[in-house]
Image (tube, rainbow, N blue to C red; front, side, top):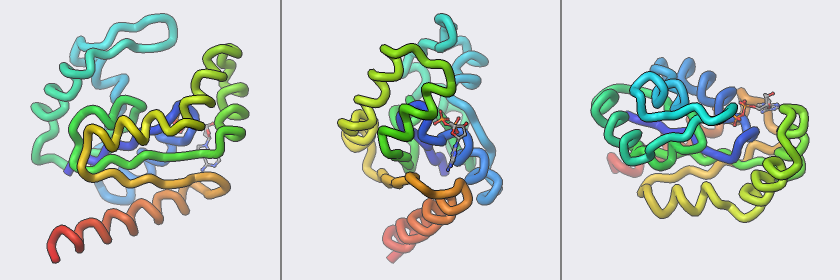
Length: 160
Ligand code: DAT
């Protein structure tokens, strides 16, 4: 199963994806590193510009039938089996991105994106199975417990 963990920068994708992959015994994959490795991402400053169609193709080719957790703010576009969208109070997003040294403009863009549900809306447009998880005030362990519970419920629904 391919589980994508998406969300606005700073919401905790990498932290949660690594812990989730450990708990499930799945491989951890970073979209950014994977795209660079496959030659479908181009470093632009500190960012990597990724061809999303090529990314979806390469992910299916490499990981179909395997168990992976894919971490990245484009992971909701790779046609994963389940997409987890992490949410965080925009105020906390702002604090985290500030301490990451984001410019005022980039910080404002991302806080606004979180406020108006950009990634959630995109994820729902592209995927059948989307889990939205509010991470505000929760530890990474609590968040992963919640995701595991939701995944289990989803499986039961599919089987039953
Ligand atoms: P992302 O991959 O979405 O950009 P991250 O995992 O790198 O986010 O986390 C951003 C910062 O927030 C990093 O310093 C770790 C911290 N963090 C992540 N999850 C947290 C949580 N549940 N509680 C407190 N801090 C958290």
